[in-house]
Length: 210
Image 1 (cartoon, rainbow, N blue to C red):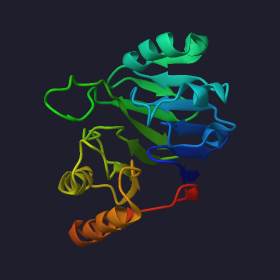
Image 2 (tube, rainbow, N blue to C red):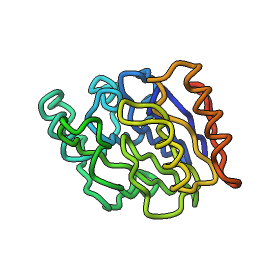
Image 3 (cartoon, rainbow, N blue to C red):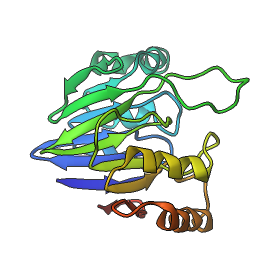
Image 4 (spheres, one colour):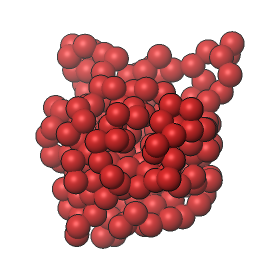
């Protein structure tokens, strides 16, 4: 298995011929989808969804109904490749996947809630959870959490508590473009200080493999 951390919230997972790319948005280079066999989109915000990136490959796209509606407006040429998934639905993209949750985290109480689905992937017995922009627990033990660390809807104490609550032995920091390098270093320090024994937090540069 190969897991590559790409720009912001995008992660690429390769195993046994499957190349699954999650959330290639505006902070991710289009090369992220090269050779993709499936693309998973958690929600409609441009840091997670960019039509031109989807056009840069011919892979099927799995996402929520709200994103499918946005694609219908933005890029109707892509619709034939889109499969809509519902909360708790199980599907296969070369590896088994379960959709988790339904709503984006609260950005501000005056904004409407956006729809968001996390995804738990089972890659040769290793469970990997990408929550999108939510702090929804996966409802099962996971081996690797792709942990959001910076966002307008997130503070560091919430990020730490989410990592603790998921309880994965390893968490990889994602959703990191909002902070400077100094800010991300602070997050890494706090995670190191406050996570319990048996939980490791990892921060990688874009393009690095786990």
